[in-house]
Each structure stands twice: as structure tokens, then as C-alpha cells.
Length: 304
Image (cartoon, rainbow, N blue to C red; front, top):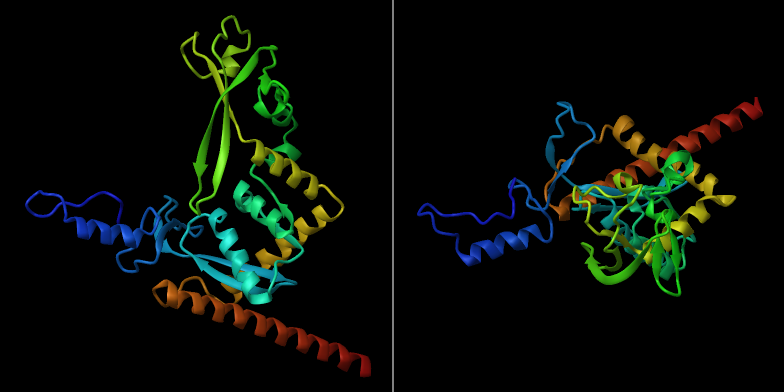
């Protein structure tokens, strides 16, 4: 496993700039790569036999499905699903010319960048965010008065009010850039004098009683989360959520359990990508064959 630390040669001097640049080019924005397959990234695997969170050189495979048929298969070098959504959607556009009218995905894809992309593309985003489960199931957490999302916001003065009625004024805006270059605007609000707060122990983690209270708010992300929650609570939302779990998860379970495909036999992104697509094609052919066999059995039974 390689890291971004600059290596030293035998004389104790830093490695030559050319060698460092070569290593950085291999990283390509990642935090690790395997020396036996420079395109692979070290990831935590679900099949952790030792139970110690061991990292393994791996790829992140994605599949878009319709009625348990794979309509698009891609391979990515990012461990998380969040940064894979847009490249996955762009591949779908290249293959079928457009995105589906409805896009359903789990919370791993629920980021501001992905919500904004789907909005630009005109697709209905039935995509959970990382707080949806608690919003739906944990009433105590949802209604907690110290949760910033529950604090009143005055749009005219751009101030937030805490449960004790003290206002936090806007003091600055910062930019956060994602792995794919998307910029998010995060607004900071602060109140310098919070002395005498009865809820201080619940409001601040600082040991300093005179420490100011500061919160950070991402208005765009909050708006997307609110919209996603509304979409998932519509008549179509629960149905799509249930269908997604049956449609997508069944495909991966079939490929791993029935086809026995749990690891790549090739190395390098240019080789594992067609290997994954061959597996996807095999899954589709097998599913179509079984469907035709079942249709033939029903027809034979009707004739008898």
C-alpha cells in the first residue's frame, strides 16, 4: 500500500522531484493505490473474515438496473458511492441517450453535488440523504431543540435564533470543493456572548464558559434534503424505495451468490471494466433464459 508520504532514498535525502510527481500521477486524486495494480484503491470490504477492518486493493463496481436487468455497468476507483454517481449517470446518457425520468438510490448517493446534477438533468431524484432514516424513525432526534435544523431563521436579517432566543449573526462564507470539483457554499453564524446559558452543556462542547457559539449551515444542501424528503414521501416514493432494494440488491446477490463472482481475475481499470460488463451481460442472458424457460413451462401446462 502506498501513501502520499515522500519517500527518502538510501542516503536519507528526499526522493527526486520526478519520482514524486510520478507517484502523484498514479494517485490521481486518490489516497492510496496498490503496488500490484496501480489502478486499484485500498478499500474496506464487507467480507471481512478477520473482523478487523482490513483494507484490500479493490474497485467500486456500479450497476443501473430495470426489472433486475442490468442496463449499465461501470467500474470506479473511489471507495465511496457519492463520487461515482455522476460518472455513472454520464455513462448511462452515452449508452441510452438520456437519464431515466426517475432516479432512485440509497443514502450513499445523497450529496449536494448529486442532487444538483439530477436537477439540472431534469430527473426526479428519489435519493435518500444521510439523515432521512433518523428523521422518519427517531422522533426524539428529529424534534431535539438543540438540533440546528430546528432553529428559527430570519431571512431578512439572515440570523438564526437558538432555543433560548439568542441570535447568531452571519459572519462569513466558505467554499468546499468535492473530489469532482463541485463547490459548496457553507455559511457561518456566530454569537460572541453566550454567558448565562441554561442549556450550555447541551449546546457547546467547549470547556471555556466564555467561548462563542458558532454554527455552519449549507442552505443549498438543506433545500435539496428537504426536497428529497418530500419526494420520498409522495405516493411514488415508498414504492420506488422498495423496488430499488429488490431490483438492485437482488442483482448483486445473484452475481455473487449464484454466479460466484466475488473478485476480478484481471488487473488494471481498462481490463476489469470489460470483465465487469461481461459479468453483467452473463447475468442478463441467464435471467432472460430462465424467464423463457418459465414461459415455456406455463405454456406447456396450459396445453396439457
